[in-house]
Length: 129
Image (cartoon, rainbow, N blue to C red; front, side, top):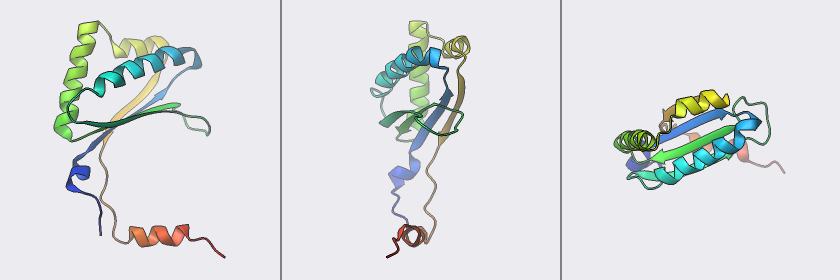
């Protein structure tokens, strides 16, 4: 039986991955922090996380995750961010190009839990005596 609520199933996860050269790290991190401070003030914002890779072979060394209440909230946020950038003269595409940052930007939604998942998980997490 799924424990996912209707609210959780409508949430939208904005997950952006970045390949940031070490020479661009500080400017990139500063900009991400400023942007996320603004995002936290918008209606429908639920939670955000900024991650930096510490180990492993992955291509992207930064990941940002923002959870929005629904599609309407993320669309309103996109418009608000675009207006804020225009107001301040910030061009994110220019910054990415100038700093040599590669980006993979997308929205995600949580999938329904598959029947039997809890049982399957319990099987794989049992500790043998």
